[in-house]
Length: 413
Image (cartoon, rainbow, N blue to C red; front, side, top):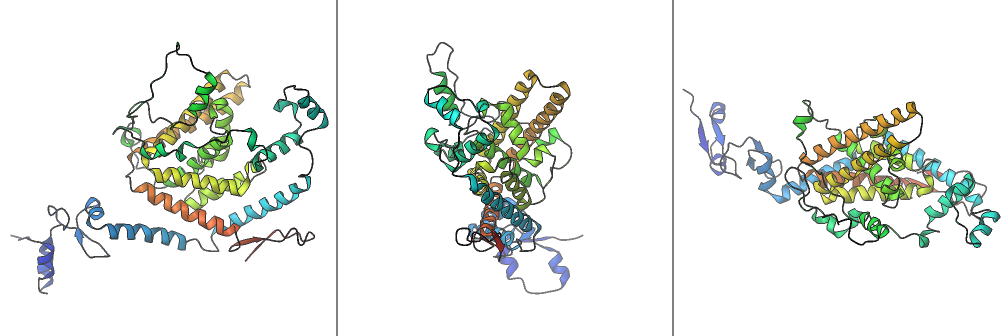
């Protein structure tokens, strides 16, 4: 009959070396809980533990060191030959080249003489009154901050101090829900609309199902990467609409699909670097370059880091808000007068994006709390790498003022 000897860790350390069979019969009790057999050994302090929970509790220094080393290792993997880096170099070259070509018309008047006279006389000017060139210059002026004094700046909800204390129930629903005012209450509709866009978006209205109820397959390990793509699209859309996507849900959902290749094209990026590179490339494209180009894109990456740093509840609320955006877009699309074929195609895309967002919401709700700061650090590492490419370390702009005849705007060091 086989005999199993149970000893404490300290006792195990004092056992003299003997036949190998005696070691096979010796099992060590977990140093943390003192209840289960230890199956693992910490590589830093050699403490024996039985589970992930006990590992997290055995030493703060070890767990923090592990996270720090993971981020450092991620940074080391960003080599000059990396495909994402080469792609980012190309994006920056094209962006700065197009930026230089457009700078020739900076001194031109934004509006035609006819529209200026119309404005002076007090008549209303609509976007439809502008030519394509005037719309382009108007957007450039808006992106550069020239018109910022005319627009009340929007503070994203994730920058709100109250975002640090978002509380959701165990099933994901909102613990504290805002009470809607009665129709008889006297209030200014415009004031109410403006207050909505500054509030923290609410969590799920009903309990979230478990992933096992949604699918029998194991969730893809790439969902964390896809989440970065989705959050970038969310932040981009809200920033573009100054927080008020409710003013044009269909347009906002269309913009969101064009920015997120995961939702819009079914792409499956395998790394955070790949996901962010694709998003930044779209931001620097002619369609969205007026928003601010690369610097605006880096600000959006900062937004992602902030949301992830707030924790799982903030991520769930962001995904719920994004889901509501697509649901509102679907409702508007039903009433749109576009052709049936085009409407069906657009409705299918919006509906598929909504389903993906709901699944991502359920997935995010089940993730452990320590997953979010780790992902935030990885995104932060990628942000630093992209900034290094655009600065003097990886790329540097040639002196346009000093050497106007030079056609080389950026060169690789």
